[in-house]
Image 1 (cartoon, one colour):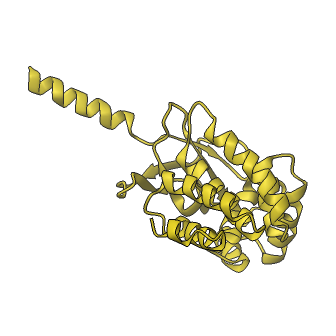
Image 2: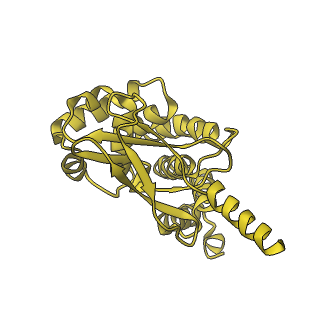
Length: 231
C-alpha cells in the first residue's frame, strides 16, 4: 500500500508539473484551433515548446525561443501562434512586440523574423516603429529600445518586469525575457548597476543563461565592479 501511495503521489506530481498553455492567435483571440506540447526539461527545468496541432501553416512566436518553464501557480503559460503571412498580425501590438523581442535581444534580425513569420521586412519595420505608442509598458519599452531610446525603454520595461514579478502566478517565460530586455536597455542607457540587477533577475529564472551571465558581467565591469563579475 505504501508503494502504491508513493506511485500515486509521483503521478500526481508529474501531472501538476505539466505545462498548460493559453494560446492567442494573430488577432489577439484565444484559440483552440492550435495545441502545443512541451518536451523534456533542461537542467534549469525549461522545456522546448512546439506546435502539436494547427489548421494550416502556423508559427509559434511566443514564448521567446520557444521554451517555457512551469509557473509557480495555476495560471497557464501565455503563447502566441500566428498563421504565416497573415497581415492581421501587423495590427496586433502584442504579436508585434513578440516578433520584435528577438530583434532587440540580438538573437535574430528583421529579415530572419520576416522569413519566420511570413511577413515582409518593411511591414515589420513599420510595425516595430509603432510599438512606442502602445499603452502597454512591455510593448512600449520594446518599441523604445528598437527605436534607439534606451532610457525611455528602461523606464517602461522596469514597470513591465515588476508587473510580472508581482503576479500571483509568476510565469518564468514572461519574467525572463522582460528582465533581459530591461537589463539591456539599462546597459545601453549607462545605468550599469541597475542593469546588473536586472540581469541577475534573469539568471534567477534561468541560471544556465549565457546571455544573462555575459551581459551582467559587462554591466558590472562598466560599473567598476570587475571583482563582482567573477563571483
